[in-house]
Amino acid sequence: MNTMRIKPALHYQLDYVMWTVIWVIGIGVAISILAHIITGVVVLGSINIGGFFVAGDSANMAYSVGGVMIFIAFIFGVGGIREDLRFFVQNGLGRRTTFFATLFGALIAGAAIGLISEVFNLIHRAVPVFPLTGNQFNTGGFFVGWLMHIIAFTLAWQLGAMISLIYYRLSTVGAVVFSVVAGAMILFGFGRMVGGLITWLEHNDAANLVYLFDFARSPATMLTSILVVTAVVSTITYLLITRAQIHEP
Amino acid sequence: MRIELKNVSKRFGQTQALDSVNVVFGEQKIYGLLGNNGAGKSTMLNIITSRYLADSGEVAMNGQPIFDNDACLNQIYLLSEKSFYPDSMKTGEAIKWAAIFYPSFDRNLAHQLAERFNLPLKKKITALSTGYASIFKIVMALSSGAPVLLLDEPVLGLDAGHRDLFYKILIERYSENPCTIVISTHLIAEVAGLIEHCVIIKNGRIVKDAPAQDLLAGGYTVSGPAGLVDEYIRGKRVLSQSGLGGLKTASLSGERPNELPQGLESGRLNLQEYFIELMNEEA
Image (cartoon, rainbow over all chains, first blue to last red; front, side):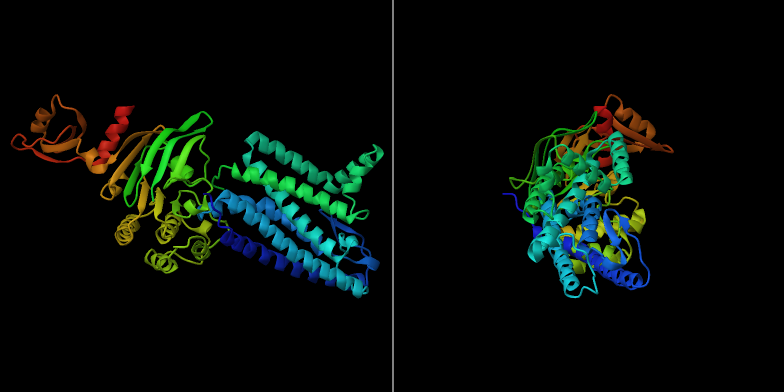
């Protein structure tokens, strides 16, 4: 019978993730406090980095811990999965164990980060003169917002892992094409692409599809939609992990 | 622990790395997995440990499929040529984590061995020289407590002193705690004294799978004055010959004779010579 030893793998995952999370949150909070102090004097324009905003106007200075962490989760997925796979296999663990340790690691880390982000949001509401975070998932309330963070964090991680594993399987030519396409996407901006897609969908009577991912209109619907996307991406990641040849870096 | 490969094949592009390989690594024995470069030795070890996926065939431990089975994989430690540790990890951290992953990992032994080999514990694994990278892997393998040790080129880049120390410690560990050890190496002469059973692989196929003693019983050496040796070996199957001054030594195939012409001495066949001849023969 095939068995899995998830506990030690999860221990490693959380140890690796949590320290990064603590650092990022610490730096994030420090930056937001500093930025808030500065915006008390100077009016800043919006600064956009990778789809999340660092600073808004002086009236609504915000720093999204959750948003940053979702981006970090993507980086964890892209950069960590192959290293984890090699390390776990070297230490007598299998591919399924690697997948589930990664998945559970993302869920636990997402839960912790979501909680921190939501607490910041509560502080923001209670003390409007001292806004520490702008929480894009807050429309559905504390619990839905927290769940949204967990799922979005997990999705970002699994998506990163999936992209990394696809890249891992490509031939040299495929890897070059993939890199060019990915580079072009980054260059033109995901946000603009998604925005364009939404506009296109709206103009083509596909409003229902837009509705699925519109958090402001229906948090529960979007939660379900993202959950389904996460399940699909995770399944693809699982299939890729169980079929990967594990080479040296 | 018994590892069995049944009809295992693996192809990389146009290269047939393993071709219907059938082999059994039994309990508490030291195996020599011998073959030229590209023969398929590392591929076999990588398939046993689930790093590579076999195109066909089965790999089992005590009858249980090994692939993706943590209960089996945890009983095997593969010391491979390539490093599978994270770039930022230090040697001491790797020891700490191995003790968490391998239930039988002996952390004290790892520290003792690190001291005997002068392995720094606060250095990044990727920053180690080739020799110290091998030492690090040796320390990890010998401390793992795994009942199956697969050692792929374990002494790569090691100086003579460290190689000697490694063989001594390997024998110590084996006598204290008998386990299955598979040594894949090019340095056949160095491991000849350790190997109990030989698995010789060529172009992805097993060409010999027998106890070392049985293999070496199939030949013998003759040495003495060059003229006498030349006369004696005429018409016989010569595996190799070498001379120095007026003396000559020849390795011959066949059963060792009870008596030899006066002036000649017979000896045991050398595993390396046997291997070289076997490789030439099959070519």
